[in-house]
Length: 565
Ligand SMILES: NC(=O)C1=CN([C@@H]2O[C@H](COP(=O)(O)OP(=O)(O)OC[C@H]3O[C@@H](n4cnc5c(N)ncnc54)[C@H](O)[C@@H]3O)[C@@H](O)[C@H]2O)C=CC1
Ligand SMILES: CC(=O)C(=O)O
Ligand SMILES: [Mg+2]
Image 1 (cartoon, protein in one colour):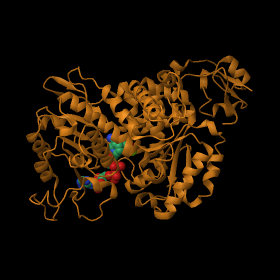
Image 2 (cartoon, rainbow, N blue to C red; image 1 turned 90 degrees about the vertical axis):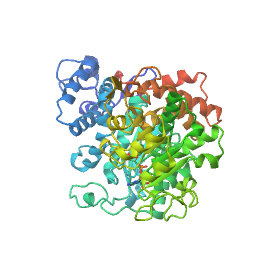
Image 3 (spheres, rainbow, N blue to C red; image 1 turned 135 degrees about the vertical axis):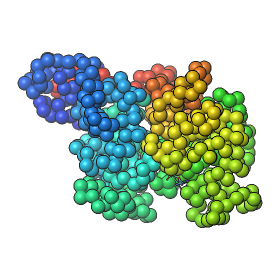
Image 4 (cartoon, helix red, strand yellow; image 1 turned 180 degrees about the vertical axis):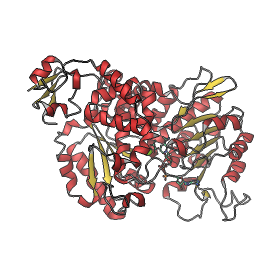
């Protein structure tokens, strides 16, 4: 912002005074302002007299957090804190990452999104409306930021929020949640990011009928008007912030793929649900191969839920199989993809273009049992395909039933099962059941956090197969080398770096690293991504020492001295 500058010495310099200083979350330190700052910034008498340190404030904030009656209230509390004092919010989050990540991110962010219009207190980020395409540039203009000020923009149109569907303007909270993870995990400077909601209306009747709903109160606009709106957003974002990474979140799967096709080869951008999720799941699969000694070339994979995440995952595992020596055709044949109609087979109606590589032929399944609708049900797919890996990206709570899991376990020594759907209540299975139904043989990772499972005297940590392990480091690495685009090799490097961080020694360790190591893992990912970008020739900036450049770029939750200008 024009009235706040970072000086050469690393101080914050501002022309603002008094209450204005206290109202800007990037500037505000509350009772941590020193006597000198209070004097020069016109804060004397506006604050209680005692000065506390950041650590002391964080202790008090933690007490306040703990006093909240439930997770949603904790989310609202933290959001409020972020809007008051950014450094304190991130300090608290860093101190209690494992405990608070599920509050600012999945699962609780899902509740906060649903309650957005009722819990609304202050705007955060920018709200772009399809009914005012001409206003997009003005919205960016109103941020009063200059070209070099922004590194990252996370945008959603809220059509497919986690597994809970269309939540209109409230989807901005997923962009805010993802950005909090970027900062907590990879030290992306929170003053250099923008959450964006692309409000194209909503098909959610509950919102349309809610008198307090604060988004566009009409049906979702699709087709040419939608595309023009998206294009206007991309153009405006890059006009004002030419180096910014554009992250797409929770779009409907058709739009998500179209946007990827249109922009991914041209600008620095990626789709988190398709590509970030592909990378983290591939990491889990690679770790499973290492734990069992199996080869990725020999896997048979059932993808239950062939949408954005499901096919994004299939694509990245398939590409890795090809690198390991299979032909593309052989690799495609390792997959059995399913949607709400059962197994996807050639000739079915309404097949989406990104699902096509994985369709089974009529010949292959001619002897498979069909249900009364002529479709091939889940249990038959498991019986016939004998998968070694089962991925859940359907948003269908409990779909991995005892019958399904026991059938799978009949055919494979160590079944790899990943119920990836978020938030927690939508998981296809809960880990404790998976241990029980497979006599403890399962290798499991889930999308949302789950407690350890005690089985046969060992406490098993449940790895979180969530793109939160992928996007922060991917973003940081790309930003540090000013990548022109994100290449497939950069996603592969992300997966490798995560898989290498898995604990293969400790009994009961998870299939993915522990969330407590999120920052360490994200740094490794960032270094690997930056190095790969340089190797691939897509880096605009080549630091002498990549590791140092990554570490230097990381923002830390510490107060800067605020000086009056
Ligand atoms: N763990 C992670 O990092 C991530 C998890 N996800 C989760 O994956 C789930 C799906 O998300 P998206 O791929 O974005 O949605 P999507 O709508 O693109 O895909 C969902 C797919 O599930 C299918 N489906 C619906 N009902 C089904 C049923 N009864 N049986 C089989 N398939 C069924 C749909 O036809 C569709 O193909 C969500 O719960 C989301 O939270 C998504 C992205 C990342
Ligand atoms: C984690 C995530 O991106 C999702 O569930 O949509
Ligand atoms: Mg998502």
